[in-house]
Image (cartoon, rainbow over all chains, first blue to last red; front, side, top):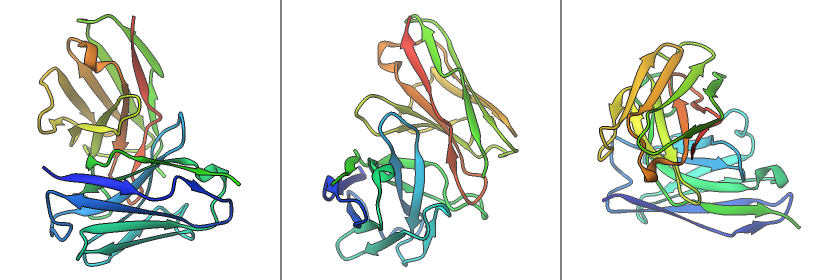
Length: 125
Length: 107
């Protein structure tokens, strides 16, 4: 059974860079059928797709975050990572990693399944 | 950006009753819509994709319908474990977007 697990600091200072890693187990991140994405959820609020990566390194970002986001993949470790720069309090959220496909040519994502358990990142000095 | 609007924000239902949740898209998303269930402190769980296809392991009491801009998630007979927040998500264009959620609470 495929499982995803987020890891990284739970506290980041304003203006610094948030860095998270998602470790995939029970399957290969190099599967040609799937993409690997990051989604976040501010406390008490809804869900926002941040961006995704294919095992080849191709990336797809939410335009509203694109200038601050970098997603990378390490197939040797079966991991992919998120970096979000110049964070503010508005970036405080639970960050999830998840797998998805692409079924619509013009769409960067499809449905997300499965998800990691999520990790809370608080931006505060 | 396609805006997804869910209604109602909160739905109070008694166990065993039927729950009907709505999701409206600001423009057509064809059948490229998914539904998720989220319980407190947990990640969202995929229920439905393609507007009406149940994900693996999802009970038959969950059903999805609709296409274009109007979608419905129906829970035929609410069980105690179904009280949660439900989100819809469209994936018809570049930027996939989620609705704001409907909380299903015990009446």
